[in-house]
Length: 134
Image 1 (cartoon, one colour):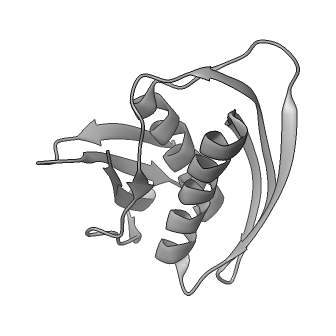
Image 2: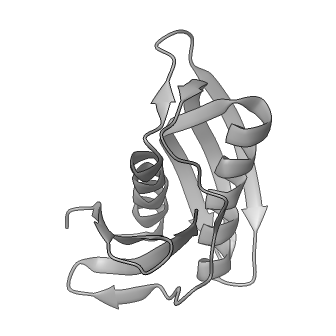
Image 3: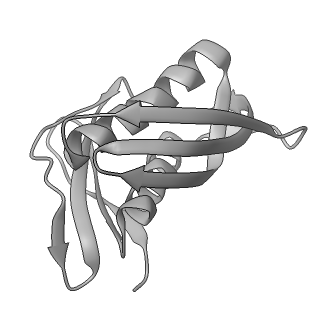
């Protein structure tokens, strides 16, 4: 099964439909899609790796925590990520975020919301719609 994302219409905010064959792929596509929406630009210079470890109540809370953690690092350390090596267990996530210094972005995302967030299993594998507060 292929992975991917596409922007979908949302009244006030941004929304992405994201799909992948497994949770790791879904989280990676969600982060890649968020970068795409924001127009993230990374330095071509030296690469940076960050270790990440999160836990949450359920998979939906975990994806929100993951994306908000990326936004937090972008805001506080001016680092963006374009590669993700993740392991997801029972409501836990660990792995590496790989990227570089953030040189710019077109539009900021304030936060990832729980608005209508539900991870479902269908013909594509796993799928969810993520709404971003902008």
